Image 1 (tube, rainbow, N blue to C red):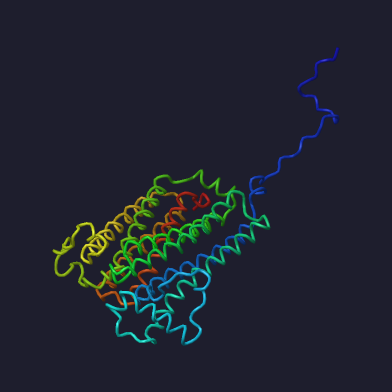
Image 2 (cartoon, rainbow, N blue to C red):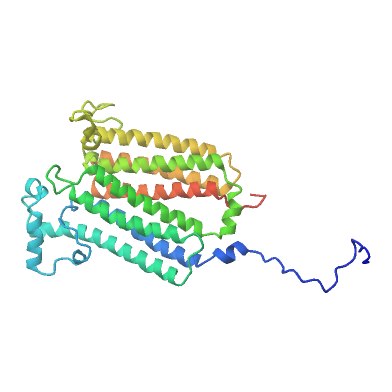
Length: 379
């Protein structure tokens, strides 16, 4: 009969050795080429910013309908000789915008608007190519971190959808009902561009840290600030859509006094169109009034979120919300200056750039509330 062994007795060397626990097992399996993918996303981010600005300039110069067809492959090349230019100009002469608005335009004038639209479409194709090369490069080399393949694939799918919506938008200006593109389609097109840009920015912030660091940081999530950041994000997105409606019908050039509109607090002609719902998309008074009102409310909401962030114990999170408030104030002032100068091209595009910066700063503050940065006890 075997004797009882003391609980203090050492285990003999005959026992199988247990493997030592290895630190960082989560990251070992999911690390991937996070830095390289982040650089690739940074290139895509810069290209999408340029795409949005070129799209804005295309709209401001009334160039969006200069190319009346959509051909993914053949349309990649511009006209290469005089005969090709004349053929493109002849197509443009058949649409309402030329017949009702630009009937005095000559071939040189057509070329000036053609290049804006062609450049906008070329950028779209180029962005799709950069996405495809990067995605399949990392996929084939098995360098995409675990859980990230679908996220990166979604970016490509949204890019393809954006191209289809772009043509859907342009086609609305070829029917004869309106001289320019339908403002609500322009809003959808711009809104999707900001969604794509926001996803790229969010993914870049996520890839800046390891999965283990993100999980650890998320334990300190500031639920209230994250919720307010989410509310700011949705409200800002709505304001971006409202701005697109204003731009779509050149409503920013119709009422150039502030804080009044046409000398009134509430313009009389906000519901002059029939049926009544068309006023929300085609009435310059109503679209600009709603855009202004939403801007005031958004600024108030940003102040409330900033005040709430003062109670945060994390200095980086507090700083992120301070940046949001500062940028919000600058964007409001820029919007007022743009309107009071009848939305000249340089101010209008600067206002659009301000929207891009503000959008990213809101996402940055929201990310900081979700994943607070580590700081010392002293901080």
